[in-house]
Amino acid sequence: MSYSPIRWLYWLVFGLCVALIVALNLPWPGLPPANPSALLEDPWFLWGFTYFGLLIMPMAALMIDDGRRRGMKWPFYVVPYFAIGIIPLSVFLARRPAVETHDRPTPRLLEQRWVWVLLALSVFVISAIWLPRGSLDQLRQTMLQNPGLVFMWLDIVLNHLAALPLVQADMRRRGAARQSLWLAAIALTGPIGLCLWLALRPPTNRLS
Image (cartoon, rainbow, N blue to C red; front, side, top):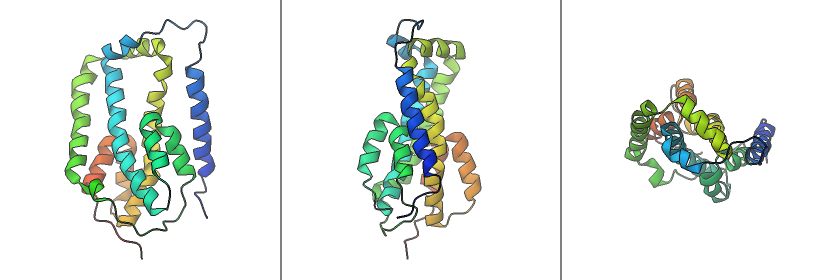
């Protein structure tokens, strides 16, 4: 079975992320006392937490569809993905066969366009509510008091990048136009671009 030629990179991301999470949760000397209540008082943290939750939804949809077509046991990756983000996703990408082997249509639930439009609008709503009320200094202080959650911000960036091979495969499967433009928009906007792609993508092309 052939795999992606850059699967080593996904394994590297997995190893580095595990090491970083462990390091962030160690009781380093000089850290200020933990203050979990600060998380609920920080608008930028609340924005980031909700943004990450919205990002997971279209990513999980792409993982389910892609995993089914490649004969993978996708629940073993998707279920923990909701809890720890990039770690199971990087394993999914590293173990993902290079060729689709199963002629399976996209689950009907994942083709509900209104759901993806609603999620894309939700990103705008939470941004309008929380971003104007927060500040970088407050966020920095919050993260200093809760270093274990600093990883969330890196997780968001890594998920933006990890979305690209999944979306690219979906675009090729569907014979989509303007693929480079879509990929650039998704890399920059994350859940907004992902949800709009899922809402506007053409019907799937079945395997021959």
